[in-house]
Image (cartoon, rainbow, N blue to C red; front, side, top):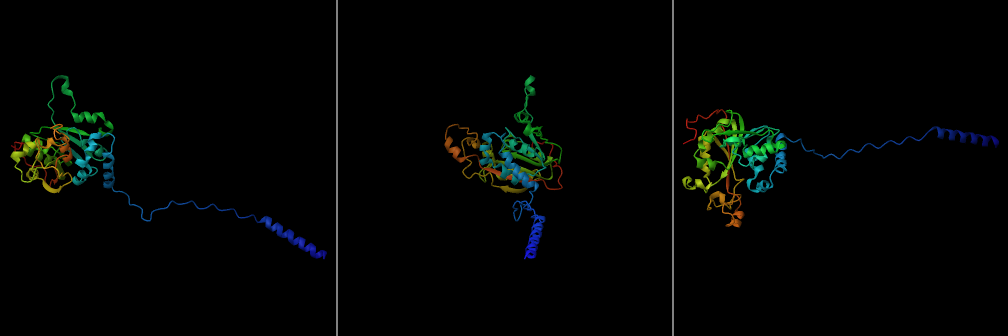
Length: 310
């Protein structure tokens, strides 16, 4: 009996020792969580997609005048530039930017990916110290170097226009200026200058006030409205090919018949408070939007000696 008890004690001690020598296995840390990934991750954006997104950023830019932003509803800048085919890396010339409505958009947009040049008429400079005054667009650029430090300005004589080295620009755009050139009787020369400065395959984008189809130019040219077919002829006579039309800037509320022409409508409202609500309800003028291309292989248009087109 004692031998049996002793054997059991030895067995218990042995089992106890074995249990102490086998420490529990350490707990393993759980694997790090991996963020859920979409089954089909979006592909990387192309340069053009990033450029399109940049247009949105520029249109919302704090440097743009609030009054100018309010006119986006009439001028449709993003859709217009997309229709013209503006792309990153292009050399772009805007003809006669005026107070800079589009320059506010185009100069920052092309600042780091392409180039922007404002082409303005040679100003009539006064004598003395005032002769050094900057033009309105140059003052605008100088006031905000963060946005406009790379913007360029060239001056031209509308009666003998030269806009830069031949075959050097990718795109020329002009907004609501052709009617002024028609009234000044130098529109043909301007279109030849556009043709000369553009590279073969380059694009000319035109927006202007559109007259009623079939309107007599001689009767309506001082109204600011122009027949669309006449503007197309100006371009094709200079060597361009009409590539496309768009109704982006059309306004069916505008019947093209106002006491002071296009200037009756906003933003000018030449009549002041007279029938103001009526004209505000119409909105800005009905406009043609045209895209022309300089055919590949064409270098410089052989213009006649009189560049005014008379």
